[in-house]
Amino acid sequence: MNLTNQVVPSKEEFVDFIKNYPSNTPLVMVNILKFKDQTPDGKETGKQAYERYSKNMEPLVAKAGGKMIWGGEVQRTVIGDYSAQPDMFLIVSYPSKESFIAMSTTPEYEEISKDRKKALEYGALLSTVAV
Image (cartoon, rainbow, N blue to C red):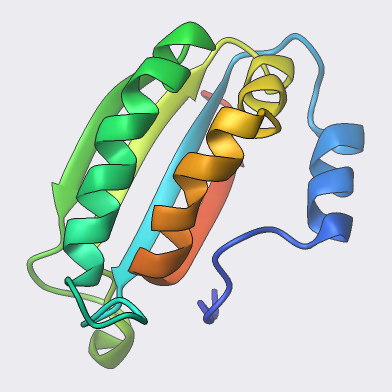
């Protein structure tokens, strides 16, 4: 996987997710995050902006039936490209793609997501199902 500076999905990626992820099926979102050293305005670190985003997201995720499963800061890359090491992984479950889509297309999310965009160098998001 080649992680880039992408932070939000393209329209094509989001439409593909909507069309091709199974409906009414639980999903787990794996977030792979790399923070900017400083936000564009230079007032804080990317990590600080992301912490605010996370705090503000808690009620939206809960309202959507979502739940934070696990989060961790990356300490060391054992196998892989150490120079491109992410800073954090977060795993969040949702009851369905429909609940995730409903949450992520609200005006509240649009406002809160400004901090995510300011905070991240890249923000990969992988939709997964349990095996």
